[in-house]
Length: 433
Image (tube, rainbow, N blue to C red; front, side, top):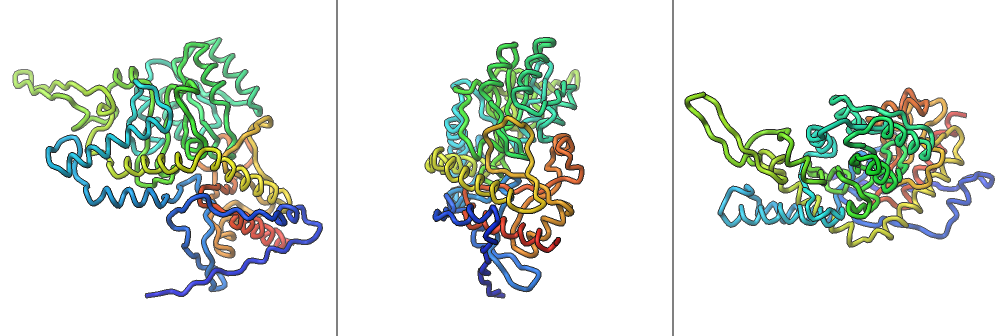
């Protein structure tokens, strides 16, 4: 059945005195930086009309780049089991899988002896690493649960991050000086506010006290290039589904020794080098692989690895500068627009933070986050995220006990999308009067 859809015209004429006027009168009209799947989807509205869907939920799961979709489609035609077959298609799939590992290593500036391990997602990667650390771990309380709960389970020391980045560094240094640790694990960019931590300084701080550093790069890697060699980061975890490769794969990249010495978190075929049954003692002896195979038990997600590699190559072609300019313009536009809407309060964790990726969290006076999200969807065809974003401690610290609303920007976001969101929030504010 065919459903006719049209793009509804949105009025963008604010009052003369509105602070948003100056923002909206800019002559520049910035379109998407890259083509993503779903860009032409339409959403039904309460009045029966339809409107092109405006996606502001990239921080949760980004749509696939069209290059990623094409790479997966091509690989499907030659898909077969990897590492265990001599047949032509098995060899082709194995080649694609291992080539994906090389592409990821190049993309994140891995050292020659680092391992690149394919996982399910960032959460899976950090849980894996948590089983490999030979000592105590220190973690901040402003983390996503993926970089908090796996460490808490093994008895990590959770440090309350002060409301300034400089203060956070001072507290962390004091903690490590008083009581050494094997690892410090931090976020690269907050999934709540998009604020970026000074990774190089944190790495130097950790190393100065004999600790290694792990970075939850789920929100950082899709927006900023990071080199393990140049930054001093020892371990980096990130997800394909936030890197425009939503095909169920993630990555853990980092130093080999801990990974090779630890027992595999998941046991099974592929992770084992040799399994010998001993009938007399009725036991089984296992020799585990070293290298990535040790932690990639079972049939791997070949298509997920292909997707991540294709996303890395596409982002590399776009260029870091172009991505930063696109994101900075749209994020600044969004922040300035929200400042002009009555009742809207944007959130910030650290008073002295100066850099952020394309994530803005906010609250609307007199409205619950779910009410705001539902209004934006049903009245304006705009998708945002509402709630506590799997980061309850920091959201509570910001005074948002009912959660907040999060708008996140990506390569497929346009200036018109940002203006639509600002207009929709003005509409919501006006209806409350």
